[in-house]
Length: 136
Image 1 (cartoon, helix red, strand yellow):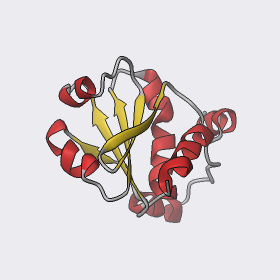
Image 2 (spheres, one colour):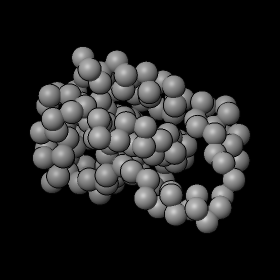
Image 3 (cartoon, one colour):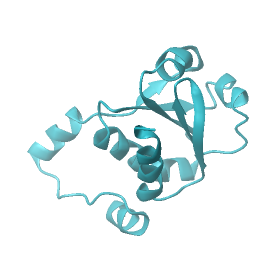
């Protein structure tokens, strides 16, 4: 099923699992799970583009884009701060940004929101937003 999702939505192809691949996955960069209390320090004060995936455990579309967010963390490691914020446990940040539905992914640069994606979209859609704001 993950390969079908990737083919349909433009994610990266997965290779067959091996012991080396499993070890490599464990050391892959991952999105940073943050809270309302950490938001300003991790995102608003970041010296580079920050991505914030606003999600909840019960949200199926949130789970659909989770592999895409993980791929972005790998692809843009060191150039972009990739974070996830659980809206059920952290209601202040979604209220602060007027979030009306999830998944919503915010793109924040120099302490201000520059873009957002609402809903499940392809890897390409997310990567295009990152590329747009990376050096802007």
